[in-house]
Image (cartoon, rainbow over all chains, first blue to last red; front, side, top):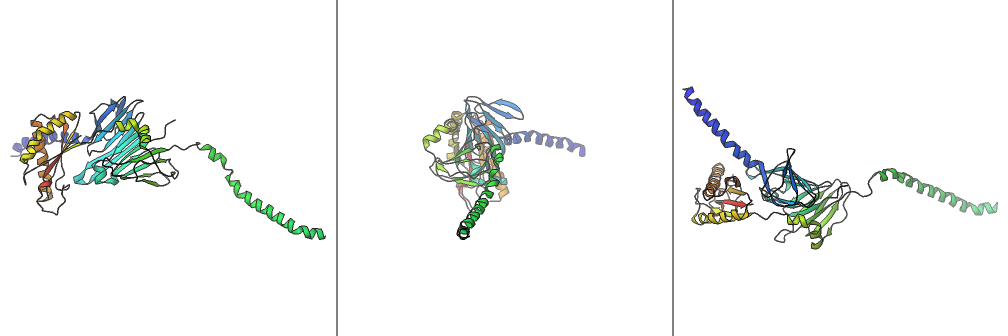
Length: 153
Length: 222
């Protein structure tokens, strides 16, 4: 009796294993690169990826542009950010799960210039949006802004 | 002797004056903490923040908090330079030209807005209305035009029936739209499906209300 059930159980487990990766996969990417010009790099888990249109972004990524570089990111909630030349931004936290009321958007501009245009997170949960710079933290009420950090010596 | 008495007020006032000067000098002395000042860099580093109007001309608001205080920007092109520790100077309005000059490359790199499509369903089913079904080829065309892009397919319901049931129904609707798009040739890896159930209505209603405009899938091409 029990023996008969084991293959069925295995099948269920196998199905579960097969079905989960795409779900995780879908959640891992928080956005994608657009309008990449010049030299840009993504640093992910210590590895360098050359920035190109269409490359997907994960939480924890560090985006860096070179001397003539610029790039844009559109997130899954339609938040948009862009970087000018010689800039670096870190995507520290991102969560967009409206059914669970889970929202987070924390980015950190290390240096350079950036723009921010809010998406659904900024509309549904403005308090969840934090944009850090070397001197201050920006809080947003559904809008767009620009930041330029002091030049590094 | 007489002279002495005549001079006494002058002497007294001289002593008083000296005392005053003494007192005056003393508080100055602590300011001789110049070494501390010279240790600090001559100019503190400042980041520049500018609030821009939205596309429809509406102006929102941002708050900028450093260690000293929080500054609010609420006017179009209002800007402020903020250092780490000090209360920032007054905000000022920048000209459009100045904004363009400082942020030309950054503004150029802003990704285009997402295209939004709304597809509607027959009540309680994941069957697309006739009109919505006919939109699918148009959506395919748009996706091809926007490549590289990503597509979010978000299912919604009205508030008829339980919220658990609706969460599942909204997911079925989103999956149905995904399958339809797969069938006409949209690459699988671009499609991302999710369900908001009855939590995110287009037209807010009380619970258990039939509302055709809420029985929908929202599709974003980013």
